[in-house]
Image 1: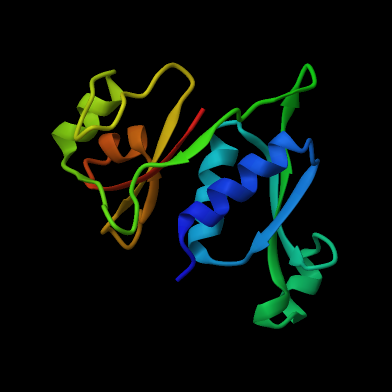
Image 2: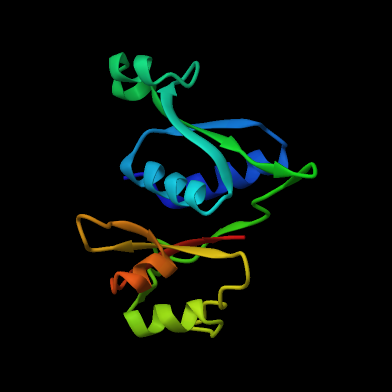
Length: 154
């Protein structure tokens, strides 16, 4: 399984280098995290493709090693929309939160040595639900699903 810190550092480095597009290996985890960033307004587009270009038609014909997820990065006034993306839960120390703890995190209070979410900041939560495995913290709160807080983006 690919660890989420690879995706976090890849996205952050691409924004700092002012890239327009990035291609990351295709996995359910990467697709889910990129979809959350897209819904939250940090990315302008997410599509499937191959190592050469974003093309959903070629994606279906490609082998697993060639499959990629392409994301278009978003800039406003020549500044990146996503300024920082950091890992909260680490392989050596996973951070699981109950519903009350996620509520406290979203309302601006520190929980389990995790700094509170500020305005315009999101946290990505991995739940045990099959239907809603990857959610933004506020969505997890709305659906009443506890889980592991993976990373945050601002």
